[in-house]
Length: 168
Image 1 (cartoon, one colour):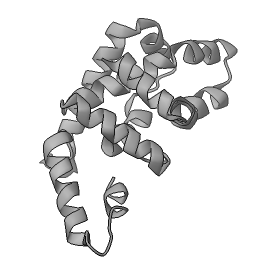
Image 2 (cartoon, helix red, strand yellow):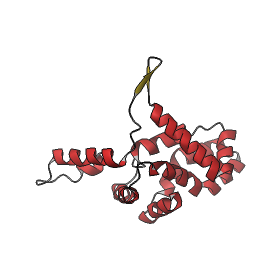
Image 3 (cartoon, rainbow, N blue to C red):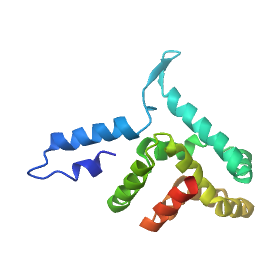
Image 4 (cartoon, rainbow, N blue to C red):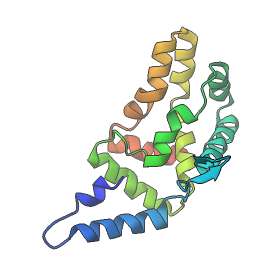
């Protein structure tokens, strides 16, 4: 997530300034969920787990059909949602779209909006998920959910705007 900030570097805008902007962004806009805690002598991210459980409840409410498909296939949201949450959808996304995501996200001014974005992206793809489930091809289904869903759904600035609209 720091790369977009480092790309701002110039002779007048030093690396330390990029890091300061990044730190400010994380403090002001990113939920404080990546703090490890020792649980039974193992470092875990309990806040991240709680957030993903929250996303699961939101999905149950907003698209029970998709939720049931994922449960039927024993697909835990953690398997594909964790990178979205940890990177604010930036992993594998073009820099141009990362800036679009950041612009829309900061305009929301809500650290918790990220979780509605997760649900929104899944709901946006509900029809495709249900269609792939009916085909009963595990490889296609898993490939779509784990990789292609985000890639195909966030390919243009219009897609980003649509995700934010769905997520509201």
